[in-house]
Image (cartoon, rainbow over the protein chains, first blue to last red):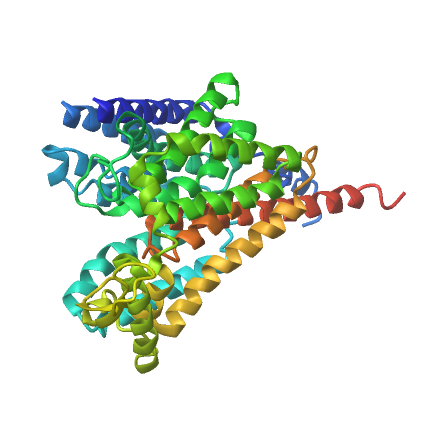
Length: 51
Length: 447
């Protein structure tokens, strides 16, 4: 009885935590200053007409 | 019935892991701590769930995770070095069969500890790892806490923690030390958690869980646990603002708790003072002496479970202060009962040195982070207190390790993994911040 109560409580909370983590975009990725230059290179390289 | 519940839980957990691969790392953490296969009678026993979980966790990281700017901490290198060294001593072990048995789980704990920090790239991941470690351990701690209240504790080695085979975290002394070591981290969640926002419900649960943690040494009547509580109380003085009020509260609570302590606990705690009349303590001292001599003859260690070769003699006082001659006891194959001597005997001086380096560097690095991020209004206000909590937990473990052979306890290696993850995460953030002003200054500089 006590065993099942404790197991149910801890496992329920773990399930809830996992579910909440699914909805967190910052679990896998945080904004970084490296992000900005990655998107820009294309328009910067376009004007190289002399090449 | 319980089997089916565990299977449903694991399937749901694995399923979520396929959506967000980091959750597979947490599945392995869960399986390693709770060992659901040991709590069930059918089905799960026959499937290597631990192996499946680790394969999926590593596979998920290789295939799906972002590996840009991956940093390897110096301690990860040391852990791999320790792993290779242990492999060497296992090959040349005094007791090859028994050494292989221990090697089979030690290498997994070490390899996972070296791998874990690679996945801890975001704050939420570090938090998620610690949250799952605590919740997984709480499945044992809550059982122990409730049973201690209900029965007044079972006495040493008697508290029923659901599993009989006394291994992993289900062993009384080990869970005592671990339960106290995680208290500072639980307290951290009361202020800085983001997965479960610290509202009144979260705080109430954390307080109840801390209480359950403090009850574990009472329920298991382990002297090591009591020492760990004392050390934790001392370490906490550093982290509280109102120190005098804290000390007063500690004194009042300590005195108030005494009448409620079960006699099995107080009787056992009294034996701390009369250690020379106590067989458990006397054998420890004799084994430690033997280990020092053994290491002189075998400086590179005897491999796992080398203690099986010991033959010890020790004097035991029959009654303290009595005039009669001490009783001479003879024994053999006594376990180390200390992680330090476990490392010295099994892995020799080099193994002990690497192990100490992994642990002590961790404490030093956490001190560095603690001081650097102490500003409560800074961007990383959560990091300083987390480093302090991880450091306090680690110091408590190192005290417990003085009396329990837990040098390779996987839970602690996960804690070390979290420390390395926090350290490399903050180092990455620092380098990003130094990168940012350079770009900004590059634009207006011509003006």
